[in-house]
Length: 319
Image (cartoon, rainbow, N blue to C red):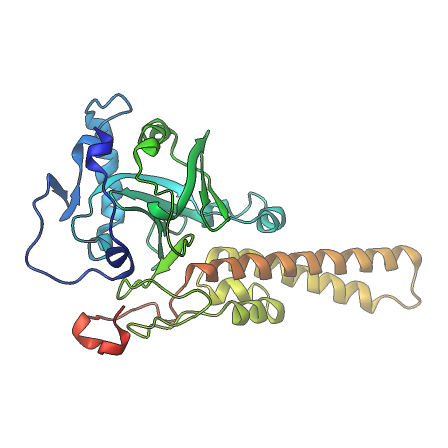
């Protein structure tokens, strides 16, 4: 059943933002105006409908009401699950499990791709969204509550924290995904513009279509080095900013107090001063790296994006 309902979008569809059109395709069902396949969305791993699953999925749809403008023609939502955004090994090492709540996200499996939507700790949209095209995946599998995706470009990403009650259904869904053996110019996870839905160019902090600007990780790093918790404040992550502000302010106060009393410098106080400097440097490094991580998610400079329509873009900006 799953193989029959999952399709594969063309290159043009996946790289071109959806156009506003009045002719919608015939769909099995819609939830909050978004096309879905209820035979997958509301059933368990034995393909049996359960009211509890429908209630849970519809609750997550409320969090994703913005998603309608991102869906392609003929694209259907198959399943939604909470997850965590992928972290590289040194980001995990420096931050540990302290800020895992800040890595919360939704994974939305559709008939064409997986949409990765970073959120805050309450699963609220942070104006950031990325896509993983099935055609770019070399292999995909579940390991307990972690979704492991190996891309054709050689990269691998791990999305942890898959909802416990969703893992069996997702594990059943994975073999039916239309992975292609060969594809020209394979890419990995690519972010979409939260205003005009265009695919964003890597390492370019401005959308070529609607010219929306995104915050710079270099500015975040500089803020993190110069001000206590500055990188988080620049990222509009006020909870970790408050924590880092208190920690750094406390350490600086202790450094000043210990440094001012080093007359003459005693051996024990020298070790204490050195230890405080190392701890302060470690906190600075962790804050700089972790705050910089969020700018890989393309955070808009302005919290209010404003309205945009295809008629506002010139021909040179069209994909």
